[in-house]
Every structure is written in structure tokens, then in C-alpha cells.
Length: 166
Image 1 (spheres, rainbow, N blue to C red):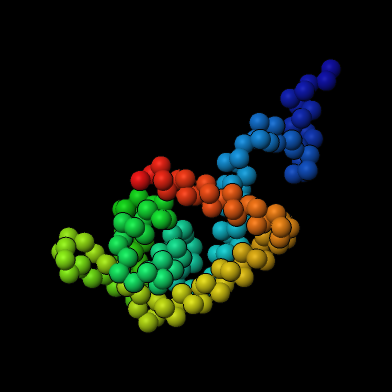
Image 2: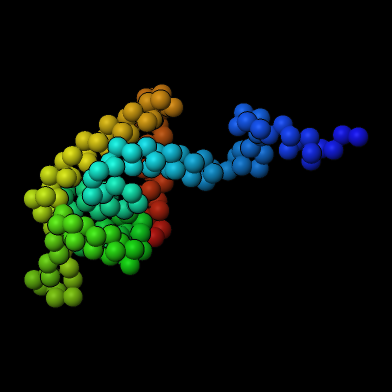
């Protein structure tokens, strides 16, 4: 007698033997898998830098470097992080001497974020690594012309997320 459950279990000994079944057409599955792979690859390249491991530190560092005086809430919104999670990331960056916080001159309840010299030097290094890593990683799996299409789709989706979140 041929048991279909036992038969499928015994043939799933290699990745290429597994049918993704219900996952096959679920966009979020592919996004999560790609995110995990690209994050792992980036972490390896950033291994000895202050921004290695975890998510949000690179985004925060680069936004603060590009926008002196940016508010923590804006960084959190752009990174799609809740404010308490972003607060912890900013605390870490501040403890590492990469950023400073200052009270807004017009509104003492508001904070402004500034990059330090150490943070600016790191931002230059990190940006170079991130750009090269992105090219290296995606050039292996997606042709350049398709990357342009994909980034345009993802930019539109990101902007729509920003619109509906605000």
C-alpha cells in the first residue's frame, strides 16, 4: 500500500525535492526569505562595525548623517519602527559615540539628532559597504534591468506605506 504522507516525507530529503505548495504564490514569503538572506550577507560584511547585527542602526545612522537635526520620531517613521524600538537603537548609537541628541531651541520637548565625527566617518564606510553589498548580492540573482523594475515597485510600495501610516 502506498501511503502518500510517508511517500512525500521520504522524498523531501533535499530542497529541490520540496514543492512550496501554498507558499508558492505568497509575496510575503519571498520578501521574508530575501530579507533573511540579504541581512545575513550584510551582517557578515559589517561584522566588526558598530552597526552590525540587528535592524535599524544603519538606517538611523545614514538618515542622521544626511539630515542634521532630524527628530527621532521622523527616523522611526521612515524606518517603520515603533518609537520605543527606535529609541533603543538611538540610545545604542549615542552610547557608541556615533550620534548626539540636543533639545530643540523652540520646543524643549523635542529632540534633534546629530552625527558625531566618529559617526560621520562610520557612515561613509557603511554606505560604501551597503551599496557594494547590495550590488553584489542582487547581481547574482536578478538581472540589472529587472532590479530597476523591482526597486521602482518597492519604492512605490514604501511610499504608499508611508502615506497610509501617517
